[in-house]
Length: 474
Image (cartoon, rainbow, N blue to C red):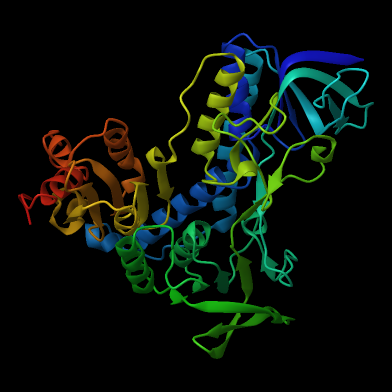
């Protein structure tokens, strides 16, 4: 039996389920096909579990230095089993919430693997979805007017550096560790690599980060990268940049793993108990029936237009599967735009320079807009304001005063081009900067927004003043 829908979404991750909810709000009869669990990578293997572990690491590290706050806690111990138990409890609670939202929106959920079929007796156009049900029951046939592909991504690895789950891990396996290793090599110093480096270091693991680029978190502003490298080294993390890992040198066994890397023309060997591969993510484009369509895949990602339509105009794609900024909040917004376009709502195309990006390490990083270098490369006449958290009373009270806020503006128009932060709780502060970008605010406007005292957000106001040399507390 075939089931007809206005919209079928392949993938129930953050982008997929948010798109489904918006579709239901607009009156579209909607179904979601998910082979795993609703919530996808973000909820089960990414954002939420990793941040739960990061929070436990932060509490552990803070407790160990409690005497700085006059709180003497002797013999502080880590119960990693309880850390994992807490993580799993949070995931379960949020998973139940997503399931409830599907029921509330009267959205049908098919638990199985969906594949796009070509033209058939059900439809003259490709897009009918065959669902191989997880429970082994007969395949379901879904006939939608529109399809959104939201199949997400998975950890990428290097050729010859195979994930075995024992010695060589991806973030998926690392999240399920039952015990912490004494030491680890992290291949890749990007967002995920640095979050894991920070977390494991705070848990007491000896960490070495091996990064191919000339700096860690290379997509961030140069000054942010430099400060993060300084602070990672301060907490004991060994960082090696300009390093090309040589997978053929991998040796594992007897409780340890060895690998070499070419560093500035010399070969260096690294040894640890585990090796974590953190070199990005690749789109899940296989096994979903793209070969039955005219959909174009370029460099491993589905090609779409500004409204996320593929070459098959009734089939859309969003989230990690289309590349770009592989972030949960980006996928959600893309999903909303795609659904509104399907419903004839005429949404505005997405401006990716307005997207706030966050790294949940300790200290945190948050940014929106252009880096100073990008702004100059685009021909802007740049002016910059910086302000250190060391001059912020709340940061001193909080016991975390490393880092700064940096604002990049255009000298000619006075528009804010980018805001970059490293320090305590900056991921909770970046939305003010994001709103400033949406509203085309100037540093003057941000500076004259009265920031309450004492708060960490005062650093934003001071950095805005600093753009024109008017910072009060510097």
